[in-house]
Image 1 (cartoon, rainbow, N blue to C red):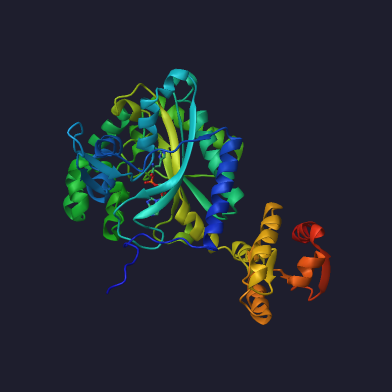
Image 2: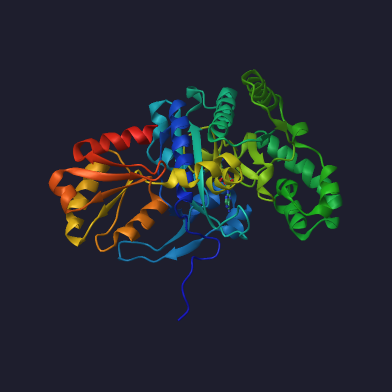
Length: 436
Ligand code: HAM
């Protein structure tokens, strides 16, 4: 029989690596709390129309990467419905914002999420078909200040702080403004006109995009097309005064906060909802998939989903890529060294009739916050020592005598010292040693 394996582009995350995932998530939650964000959890699948309307029919994500199926009705009262595993979370958050009338509070909504997303992309290093994002959105009625350039700068400053807190060294912030919807229409016309002449010399995808969605041409990675793309008009020249002023305020606030950035006129991003400020944080160590995170403003998304006017800005970080980057950095390897994975104590019951008292002792120590591994009384003492030395800082031996006297034998593997410890003092001793 053939053995079953995880599906192409998906993978299992196993300990001890998952400890790093947990640490990243905990750091993100801590930083988000400091900036007064609350957590939102939206469903993993949604109506297909949400992504078609939100992300855009012409994007790669919607046109070729979604996991979509026709969900059959189970009762006469139901209709069958086209559903899709979420390829990203912004559309779902904005749907929830509209559905729960969050705008009616008059306040800015600051929401973060951590969870899996699904895209049928060609798997490679840093690119998976199920991947994880840590993201956040700031959205609200214009009267709450949701359009303010300060929101953009605050989100970017928070990201710089979060990457620094995570210990990610050497990130670059690539920044651009793709203007308002009207600016984009103007730029699309300028670009389409410029492309009419050069597109026949470009790749097949660009030839198609030149007609359907000229902005996407700027995303092209085909080396032969790059000199042509370099000659195309830039979006900065199509921005109106209001968009130009908005972007100038964003960069001025970043300058004041001391957050470094690169202006990148070609950064247009792969989703259609963006307006004005768009950005990516990249990292050289990631190879071809070098975007640690991406985001931007989406001032018309709520309306395009049938909601009220609710400008917003947000981002999503690729958790898989944060892990890859940190793993490549030396100090994290140290944190994952045997010292970090060892438990405080290994309890070795001497004989099977000691198994039950050993479980009781383990429960006592674990309730006191100790990390404890429980051996088995069917092991000989030698095997218990071998097993414990691999995973624990010390072994606690529990035999008939120890149980009767309430004094346990403890061997510390780091010092080699062996001592007799009254049961009542064991948790305290382990806690002191763990803190030292
Ligand atoms: P995105 O640029 O499509 O934006 O994805 C954000 C990040 O998710 C990327 O920079 C990358 O780190 C990670 N990512 C994307 N696809 C994959 C993949 N196949 N494998 C591994 N990691 C991946 C969005 O999703 C927007 N919703 C971000 C946003 C939020 N914009 C405004 N608010």
